[in-house]
Length: 284
Image (cartoon, rainbow, N blue to C red):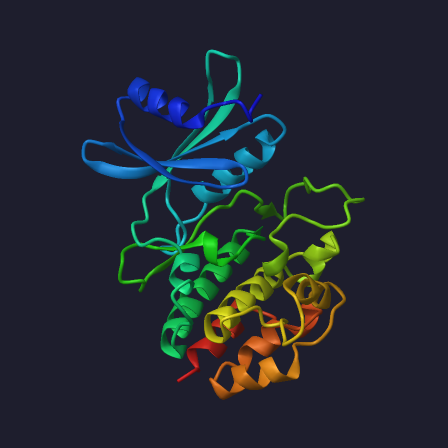
């Protein structure tokens, strides 16, 4: 039923019902569609998702965002269920609108400078510390989920907590699943092998380190000449060390700390978020 549902029309109708101004689509993801809306000249992102089979994850996402106050985490304005006349239940999320676009779009124009990468890395590593205090693991840190508040690309914001792991709550991932939630190209080994007992903030550390390395190298840090992305992902899943050539390039750029963050086993990565932040801050 969800495949036949015209979420664009549903979003426009819902805006009309709530007294919002509907300004059009922003984009579609695997589970959600996002739209630009406004109320009293204040713009925001309206996100719709079909709740069937995913209601608990959607509720957890809202709870996680409500509990977060860091400036580099997208602000949740409102979240609620909504049933349309056909009987389909939707989950509606209203978030702040981030006008600067995604890091993914920025990287389409080429690599970032070490200074830009360091600035993004420090702020997002601080976000990991905030999430660690809340006992939350994002699990899907990737360029598409990192946005900017404005077109200066100077203030990154982490978005999309759709597969957030609440460490104090029962897991929603089946133990027999071969792979845990996440985007494979930006996932830590313990995600790719669904080793749930190893999931903690250091999982997000690995994911963020892949993103930062990609900002500098222009490609996945486990990708080398003659290999494909699926082969690079398999290298991560089989717990291989960072390829020597990519490690050398990162060290030459002053980012040797990323080699530590990309260690195959969590115990070998930075132990505390403050250690990761400090290592990134030390980059000149």
